[in-house]
Structure formats: C-alpha cells, structure tokens
Image 1 (cartoon, rainbow, N blue to C red):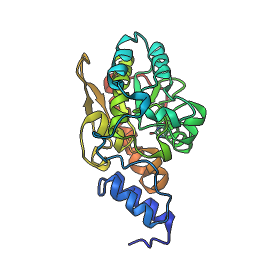
Image 2 (cartoon, rainbow, N blue to C red):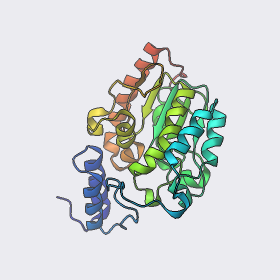
Image 3 (cartoon, rainbow, N blue to C red):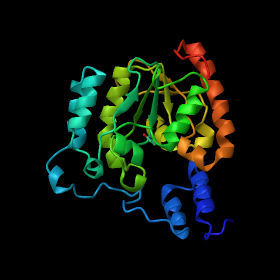
Length: 271
Ligand code: URA
C-alpha cells in the first residue's frame, strides 16, 4: 500500500483505481484527503441533488427545458455555439472565465467528447488545450487525426467545474440537450468519448474504462436518425498519471484506424 506521505504516488494510484472503476469518486476524494490534497469545495459528483433548492437567479426557471428549446431552435453548429454562449441557466457559468464550446474542423467525420474544460481551457475558451489536450493531440495524430483537419472536439459541459471536479448530474442534465443537438447537427461517422466519465454519460454504461477502452460500441439518443459508432478512449489526464498505459492508447488507435477505414472516415496519413 502506498504511504499517504507520498502524495504524488497516492494521487496516481487513486487516479488509476478511479479510472478502472475499483473505487468511486467519493472514495477517491476521501483517499485524496489522506494524501493532504486540497479538498474539493464542490459537493461529491454522486451526491443526490434532487432536493437542493435552486439558486435565486434560477428560481421559477426550468434550465433543462430552456436549454432544450434553445438547442432545438439551432439549425447549424454556428448558431448552436452562439446559443450555448448566451445561455445562463447552468450554475457552472458563474465560476468560469469563458464558455468552452468546441474546436476543430466543423466538417470532420470524427467527434471527440471530453468531460469538461480545465484551467487552461477555461482561460483560452477552447477544449483540450492544456497538457492533457496536447498529449491527446499527439496520440490521435499518430493515426492522422488532427483537429486542424479532420477532428471536431467538444465536452459534456461548457464551463469549468470548480476545482476540476466532475460535473454533477444536474449540470450534465442541463447541458445534455446541447450535447445531443451538437451530435445531431455534426452527424459524425465516429464518436470518441474521452475517458470514463464521458463514456458513462454518453453510453449509459457503468463498466470501468479498462473494459470500455478500444471497444466498438454505438451511441444513440431519441430522435437520432441512426446509431453512431463509438469507441471510448483512455482520458489523456489518466495517461499523464500512468504513462505505462500509453501502450494501451496506441493499441486503441490501431482499432480506431481500422474502423475509420471500414466506415470511410476521413483521416490523414499517420505521423
Ligand atoms: N479534459 C476534458 O475532458 N476536456 C477538456 O476540454 C480538457 C480536459
């Protein structure tokens, strides 16, 4: 057992347990405190929030219905992006510097969906531009997938959760109509959920990411013309903590490259 006096080793171990589904977010948080890490100020992502009264600003409003109405009214990705930027029904927005909607090629066949913006993304207003985003770019470029050419990137929520905690169920529910509409308008041939949290939210499964990664699955929601092929990836933040597992990420890239060829998905020559 790692000694709690070694916070880096403990953090890495806890991250591994979390990503493999051996422990849940609450247990990870408790273990994090053992390692003297700052306790997240926000409530546990699994804490039930059903009875929480809405903040005064949202009293009498139904932010999910508002989001749905705005999302349905958007007829293009550009207008959906503007609608999200104008939406003030998600409390996460109050602590964020920027709204982080999407990046990459609007006509790409591949859509990658992460969890939510981190610090650098919040500062720059773009998804996956921090250390983990740069690693993800490199891994995908190994099979000729690049955001400048053939990749479209977004997240489950558009504002940075405080302390980089996971988004809670209410925040996810409020952003979900936008995520769904973005997938409808984008109509990708392949979806790549980045990390356990995104895979669980998009696919409605609960298996650990080590069972899901590299697996050919399908994404679907009511109203979508046809299910979309989907392959969950290890999150790059996890790979930064566990560099030894990069080999698994490279193996997953080979699966994705093959699938792209089968599906007629556009990609460039590999690096
Ligand atoms: N992690 C994510 O899941 N999304 C980002 O945009 C950045 C880091």
